[in-house]
Image 1 (cartoon, rainbow, N blue to C red):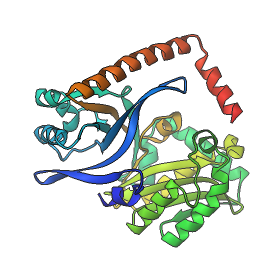
Image 2 (tube, rainbow, N blue to C red):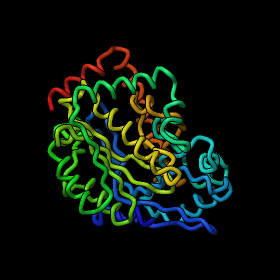
Image 3 (cartoon, rainbow, N blue to C red):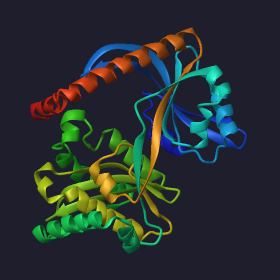
Image 4 (cartoon, rainbow, N blue to C red):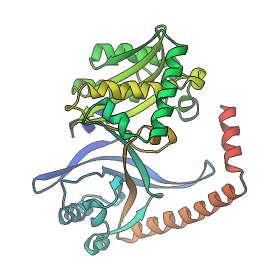
Length: 341
């Protein structure tokens, strides 16, 4: 709750919590819309008040999760829609979504397919972590590390937890971050005054921020922004200088981060790579779980219409996307877009 309050933008939404017995469920509410996008073009939008709730709530039983969801229905108002993210397959919240009492209150629509969330667990230290990886993956990681260290003997690793040091970290990373694909195409570059910086400073005030930078001859070439809570390091942002891509600075940094975190064991014994999967996350992980996202529309006229519109459009969009994949044009379009920016 403190974390959500600290990181939420005061003009973009509000933070609150729903209480059920001895448990509470934090949420982030903001005005937005259900977007109907096709090939990057906006075809329409339904305005809603979105209540975002994160899953992975093992402390709730299935009856408690169902009860909370039913109680939330009274709080949503005329435009309210629940959006559940990170709902772990098989957890009580996942099971509660299939309960008849919940289905009487909501029309439930899964948003996309299940996603794999990658974890690196190291309760017994760095050597045990490496030994837990498949042999070929372990060899690939070590090969990338040796190759980088031989090419750049002047490397160093910076670890930042204090507010004043984190300010310097953000300033060092900003010019390199602005060269990345994430910044140029998605506007997710790191700046000293942006949303990511605000989140870093909020984490530092709460004693949770732990950021890293990999340097070559005093210049940052890769960085990671994350936060420690409940024995888990949550990796929120990672990037590297695209000019050094052939030397895999991002992979080297991730290995060095895990090695550093292992020094904090048992206070920290797991790295959570958060949402989205890719080959690098798979290579570094020794555990995973499957998660889903769900929209819960109130079971009334407006909610039923919104549910039907989004479900129908998603089916149409999936069909178009499948056809584009079949015709092998999707990747060509993506490459052209990247070159254009």
